[in-house]
Length: 291
Length: 178
Picture 1 (cartoon, rainbow over the protein chains, first blue to last red):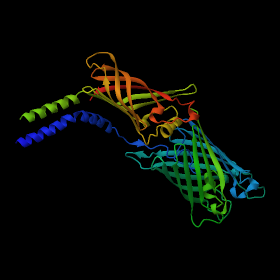
Picture 2: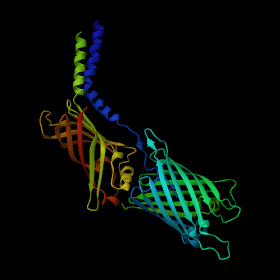
Picture 3: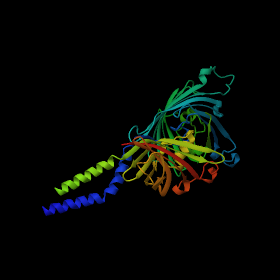
Picture 4: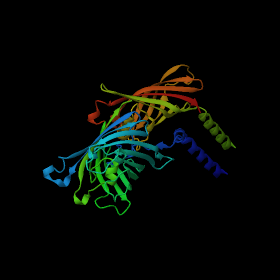
């Protein structure tokens, strides 16, 4: 009996002496309850990983001006200053209708191509319950603007059009590392050679690895389907560096695709890395709040 | 028998403590970064707060991602470059209130001393504010300053004209009896 009493007293003493602590812990319990799922943001820094779309869109009322260059072949050597003497350019404007829906227009010197596009991040990656990935749809219509040779076959306006539809499946694995899987469909109303298919699809992958708060290494690869692919075409591979400076994101990269719109780099990449068909280039993203 | 009484007494003490807890999950916390070039404001209405009238303990917790800015890019930079919100998702204050008379009507100046933690760095602070008895609850208001440097929040030289080194914080919490 005495023993039990002693034990009980000990327990009580322990309880009382820890009561101050206990109150503090209990206060904190109140905060533990409010852990709801949160949206995982900023899987990538810019709207494009390098060439291909990332899940990022312009915020609501934001106009993103993108000016991109791809210089000539690095293997051209000193005569062309390793390609710097020749540049292809793309200028684009992306406007955020909401934080998740964006529309854009762009013009490339490559093929004098005009494009209109729409992008919608329709599912967000969530932390603490919800979707493990974000899903983003992207569709672009491209119009080839080159003058036709007078002796060529007759073409109407519709023949100049091509379209690409893609799905960007992204997971931000950690604050540093994000991975995207990007299947794409390319449709050309008219192809330039009779044996080429009108429809081509690609399976792509892209990643971002943050080196620090302002810089990241990016890469992307697109595997052409159907196989075997035609002579003279290759898979697109690009590697680059993103540098963020306040209002700008600079993206510097090396790629074997010189065209900067989807049809060109996904389905019509003629060069190969191992042959030195490499192009140095950059994208500069500048954001303006217009509304 | 004696022990049983003691336990009972202890339990009743616990309940009485419980009865004097005041809480909210909709405390408003806003901040202002003021420079000659640009004023940046952001607000959250999702802070949680709890006040224990028996012990004087006061605690706030704030999800950093709940701060909203007028421009999406500001919000991205705030979370990605300055607060590193994924790594440090919450800011908190855990302290004890001094100078409060629970029976008094009207606004009372009080101080709260405790640990202010954000961006993974905790600072011992004494913060001045006011508390007003409001029906069966309390309204807590405070204005204080936070130096970015104190919490290891790095402001690069190129943006020192746009972002203040010292940020003004305003908070208001309407605490209700739990």
